[in-house]
Amino acid sequence: AQKITQTQPGMFVQEKEAVTLDCTYDTSDPSYGLFWYKQPSSGEMIFLIYQGSYDQQNATEGRYSLNFQKARKSANLVISASQLGDSAMYFCAMREGASNDYKLSFGAGTTVTVRA
Amino acid sequence: DSGVTQTPKHLITATGQRVTLRCSPRSGDLSVYWYQQSLDQGLQFLIQYYNGEERAKGNILERFSAQQFPDLHSELNLSSLELGDSALYFCASSSQGSPLHFGNGTRLTVT
Image 1: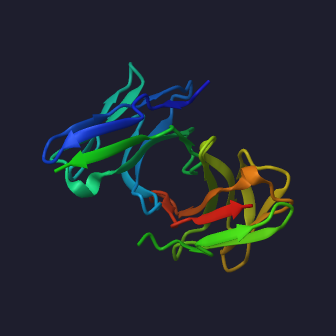
Image 2 (image 1 turned 60 degrees about the vertical axis):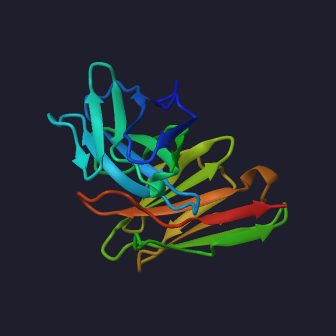
């Protein structure tokens, strides 16, 4: 079974608007971490935001916030005030277990295109 | 700049050949990870080294091997290459409590 599911292959968003990228996960481990990475067309992987399974509050990092709904096993990324530079592929990933190691399972990714 | 350095950036080789991908982790990071990104398999964890020792293994083929040297740089060796090994290979590094930082990747094309 897929550990991370991203159901939106591609999305268009107008500049300055917000966009929500869906991510659902599957694990039976009570301790896990969820990550979002951005991959521009140049190819590098850029860390955006992290949410731990025991974190009480949703994570935020600047214009990025993570809508963590534990019971639904979802960890959606919200990008506010979209900019042209946000056009990229976005990956949701999960680390299972309490260790600090990064054996991550990645979703298939969502391509975001920001329109002027 | 993540601080993780990968060389070469691009590699074109023929089937049956062997190549070596090199990675220098961020200063102070003891863990090095290798990931493969291909069109059909997506992003997959291959292997992790911690301070010179293999720590975890993922979907790494037997034709592939890796090592981490005393200066903490790492090499991923790919042998008997097949067309399906064409992919972007990422190295990443981390230390306790820090996020995983990726290098810019090595794009391998097998012809």
